[in-house]
Amino acid sequence: MVKTRTRRPGPTYSRVVPGASGRVLVVDDNKVIRQLIRVNLELEGLEVVTAADGVECLDVVLDVQPDVVTLDVVMPRLDGLRTAALLRADPRTRHLPLAIVSACTQREVESGLDVGVDAFLAKPFEPSELVRTVQELMQLMQVRSEAASGGGDTGRGSGAGGLARGEAGAPAGPPQG
Picture 1 (cartoon, rainbow, N blue to C red):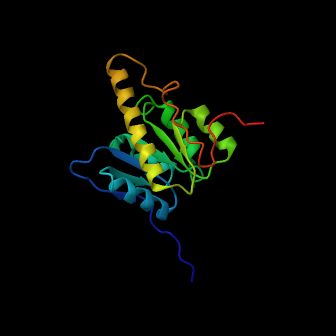
Picture 2: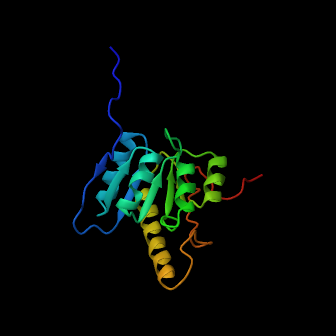
Picture 3: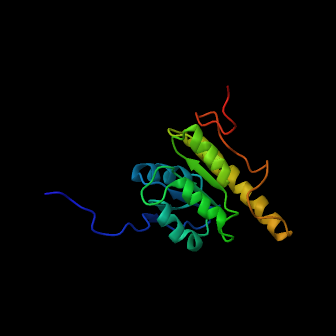
């Protein structure tokens, strides 16, 4: 007998954390990775909501109103790069800081930069680097919010928003050589 999934994937995790210092939407099709990211961010006092793929992310992002979104690249239904492009194309979400947390190829990094991804963290990652990246992106969110309230552009930041992480095997700049 073969087991099949009979229910539609729904939000896999969402818990209101009183006094949380921010909210992160974690999007990854691997439940273990979602839990690993969730636990590390909750230990830092952040509220975490998870989604299993890009379609689920787009379904919940407006209700969740995260300060940061982390995305895996390879996911069923809608991958992380296409999800990032759709988030950037929507005026309601274009300002959200986006981080790719994935074992990225150079081409995926370049594609991510083209659609406006703010940071890259290569799997496997150090939990401290994950937390540092999310905290930096939360600061970026504050800068974008202040710029928006002052009449500035809430879209992708230029220069200051490029928090791409190359040291973990996913260089953010042009190919060397």
